[in-house]
Amino acid sequence: MTQHDHQQAVQVHTRADDDPVSSYLIEDDGTYPNNGRLPVVVYREAIALDEDEDAAAGDAARPAVRHAAGIIEDRFHEQRWEGVWRNGIFSHHHYHSTAHEVLCIATGTVRVQLGGDNGPVFDLEPGDVVVIPAGVAHKNLESGDDLVVVGAYPPHQIWDINTGDADERPRADENIAAVPLPETDPVLGPDGPLIALWSAGR
Image (tube, rainbow, N blue to C red):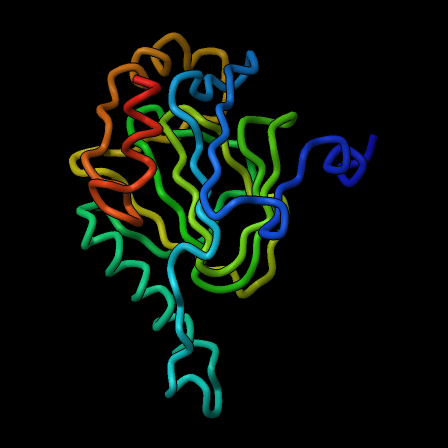
């Protein structure tokens, strides 16, 4: 089976398919612990990225990136999520056992797979947000050169990187169980849907 055929065999989610906020519980697949208590939460067009007027004239690429990424960073800071960064997404499955993570697309598009090789696939566009609980594997399947992602973590959570090696467990499982819930939704604050969805899972 080719990689394309495999992608067709798993469920692919797009903006047209999803509700504005959707949640997906991803169980342990034997390689990646994922998280059987806390769902992944996907927000479509969650952060409005208005075009920068300066970027609209002339060479727009870099100003547009700075403008969009800055809007996202401001939102995460407002909701008290920390360790904000701009980059891409690794092209191999990896997970964090010591931190939850939020990702928002600033520019470009990306196809992301969550939970391992048989996990769901999401086509993400600018303004889309994914909150990934500790333990859930994630991977960039396909993206353009213009992809810029902004990420962050709840306060005082320091991320590690794990790749599914057998010797990572049970240490990783113990770490995941000990990661505290965030006090705020990174997009919508203390009353955002993440808080209710994750409190129910705890």
